[in-house]
Image (cartoon, rainbow over all chains, first blue to last red; front, side, top):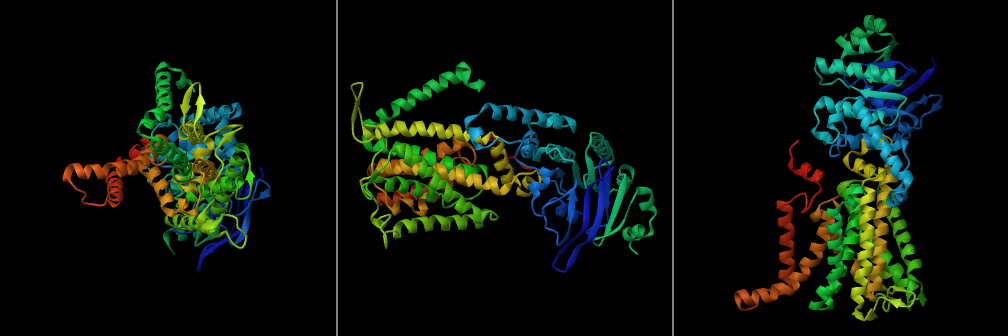
Length: 252
Length: 352
């Protein structure tokens, strides 16, 4: 299978801090790809460059054969890249269902005129949005929370809702930024099942995670970042035994 | 749509309609001045609902909203008055006014896209003042706006030979100018309310709300925040433009004085005091803030005479004092507004 995402020498610095130093990696269609590294290694910066929130200072991305435009988050979503955030970013005062419905924005078209006149096309689209959103809530198993405000959901449910909202954009690549952070063993196990299910349904997954056990058990391939540079990119069994990785984590 | 068909809401709608029809004739018993005040209340509902799109739905604090009202008013004034000798019909002027206000909205919106909160408020405030000062000074070298003197003898709203100024006879009834405008304004207000409701529960409405809640997350799910914000400015501004046109026609006179900062502040106060983002609340806010100063104008003088037997405080200053106090009290005890949306109420009162 070919590469879905190709990162070519992506660089980003904040003042004198080099957050990313020419990171090149490639994610294949249909795999679960782990991105790990110590705190401050540049994982989230990489995510932000990929999803258009940051403009890289060098290099770039190619997604399914065409370059990604920098600094255009909504276009990244349109191309099929969805993400969640390390510190959950839901629309706190909207219901769970509305959060997912917002996720359908990029795949729907109704404009102001359609809404004002309530044309047939608009009404049908609106019904389809709602239906799809309900189905997605069911998919992540929080359908009974549909009418709760997002901020009133439990932590684990908020994580699930964020994933449902990302899935609503019909991504080809789903980027999860530390989805297991702050979860207990049961919740992490449930999350693992959810992620595997999403992959089985045809979405490629890029996963940032601190839980090494989860990453090694779940991912097909893993990349390790340290001080903004790529240390290794390989299957978990190899990465685990790599001397540089052990040093990066334990400190040389 | 189904809710409209059940008997209880049908009865409700009938009663409201009857009340709305009777209103201008009832208040006319206190003099035509009160009909005019009612008309202004509806005009302010119009403006407050327009601003509600920008502030309430999209969460963009706009302190220069009156500028769009000014654009609409001057468009009407210039295209339907002896000033340029033009007397265009309503169906031409209102869309032009709305369109120009819309352009002004986009002009204001585009440089301020990256600003939020206080910074946006300052820029919009400046914009509002710029428009007013333009109107004030565009009388030289070419006299466009007639400067501070304003434009007089503006044509009233007219459909063919039917004019909205002066008395006319309909089915043997005498109906006054302000009463005719009342019905026009109510019709327009109903349209605006429906548009607001429909926008709120639409794909665009949700996108506005998402931007208000978390702009970065909104971008990440694929909302083109630039266009959607500009759309909010443009929509809000168009409402202001239409309201301005009707205002000019109704008054027969416009001058830059009518478009001062305090007007923007008042409209914002209506939105905030009523309940930001909640349409019934905004309507309530507009009605209250229009009537309260008028009631006080007529009420505080006699009240002082009754209580103290003489005038202790100049009624005019007492009026604004009481008005200000009322605003402070409402915001102290009802921070989400008098009639907030259920969500917003939870947001401000229910922990988390």
